[in-house]
Image 1: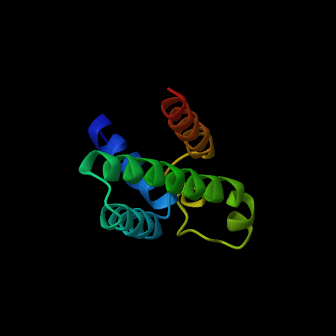
Image 2: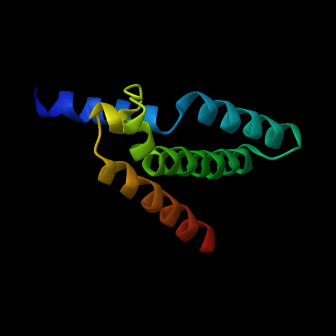
Length: 107
């Protein structure tokens, strides 16, 4: 497997670990609410970015924290248990994502 295939596989696994469908649904719904409430495009984009970052953090944290239990019950549909992405990658992704979001909000 080449580097491009490994990277693509890791991106897909991280998307799956983030609980992609609820992440997209919540982000889309909240962004639509922001736009409907009169936010300008830049404001709606800021809402989208903040909500997306929060949802990614929640999804990754959930998969990271549940990895042992998921393994015990054979949840091979979970990327960490299936070996598609390491626990350290997912466990690092959540706090890094949140730290980046908090840093941008504090400026």
